Amino acid sequence: MNNLILVRHGQSLWNKERRFTGFVDIELTEEGKSEAKHAGRLIKELNIEFDAYFTSQLKRAINSLNIILGILNKPNVKINKAWELNERHYGGLTGLNKDDTIKKYGNKQVQIWRRSFNTRPPPMDKQHPCRDKINSNILSESLKDTVKRVIPYYEKKIKPLISSKRNVLIVFHGNSCRALLMEILNISKKKIVGFEIPTGNPLLIKFGDNLKVQNYKYLDAKRTKKILFNV
Image (tube, rainbow, N blue to C red; front, side, top):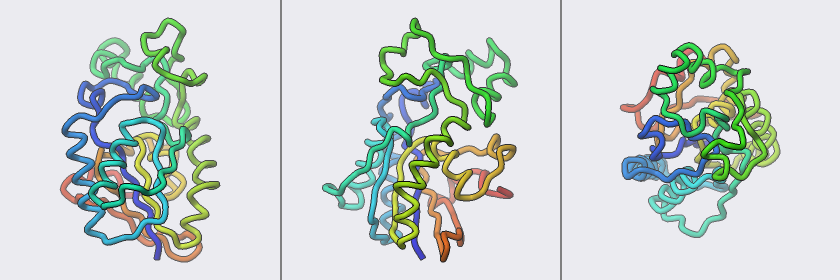
């Protein structure tokens, strides 16, 4: 049986400030670093030898992985960094406080922008204060758009490793993780709306023959949210 561990990065500065982050490259908070260390300790207890490590091109995920690798005593391993694993681009919402945005547009509209499968937030225009912080021609993404880049990358780079009985660790983001779990756990577009990913809590997925999922669980049971039931 082979293993895939998925970790959403530790708390970032904009997570703490409840701001839409997306493609902006934001640092971890001290709590986020502590979450990554705790994730590393939980993973280390499994005594799994990993064959490949993946992360996005954003430093909150990269730094979380580096902290985990420090706990695992794997300082010089190859790290595969891919923009395809980046967080979803929040368009014009980027940098805005979520509570202020709810007051302005209403909770229903904000939830549609945040959690629906098909709807993109308003695009980021050239005058947006975060525009020069993002090196991308993408102006906004829905979860559907995120799926369109995450899944092909998974199919090409990660799935073959799992198929060949390799153990893989991925540290990335809430929405890129949601996109991947839609594929792996066969979660519907309707149910993904309520699917929340906690920061810094490793999700262990065990595969049997023919890439059939045998079981899955969060390693920190105390921080497990009710998101894996009835998927």
